[in-house]
Length: 111
Length: 113
Image (cartoon, rainbow over all chains, first blue to last red; front, side):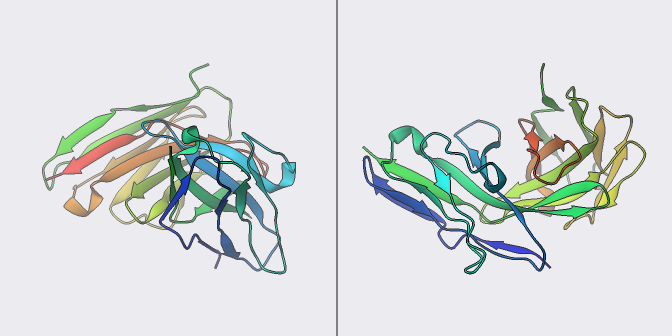
């Protein structure tokens, strides 16, 4: 069975400091990995996905198959980055692609 | 486009009461999902529907039923609510490819007394 682990429930950093939110996964096949973000009082939305190899709002994430990790990084944190971040893994199944979420990390950026 | 909409936004139930949470999407997506979000637990999949006319259990289906009414609508029913079902419920939809984005609704906050 697949599993997504986010070891930190809460991460506090100062504005301008680097940020790294950790995500490890276990899955026997080839995973599709995502980071979703939920800002206060807003709906969950996609931040980025590994297949796109994109940088969104200054965030990047690299899939490391050897370490089974997909850590989210940003060189300089901003106050508007404060939010709940979820790492998620997708596996194919019956024509529908279920997401398995980690328990989330709450990022707090201190002014 | 409204994206994914959910009703109601907030509901209080007494133990044993029943209710249906409604979800609709206007993105012509085939797949739809119901999740619950609990503190410290992340989001857990309750049920999903790969296409109109099909539904399957997710991680935590007990105490729930679903109906895929048509391609747009996917409802979640609590037949006899229990305090353990107090949660925030999210509906989502997506296309057919594993790397596609799932689009989420605004959520329904349910309190069962």
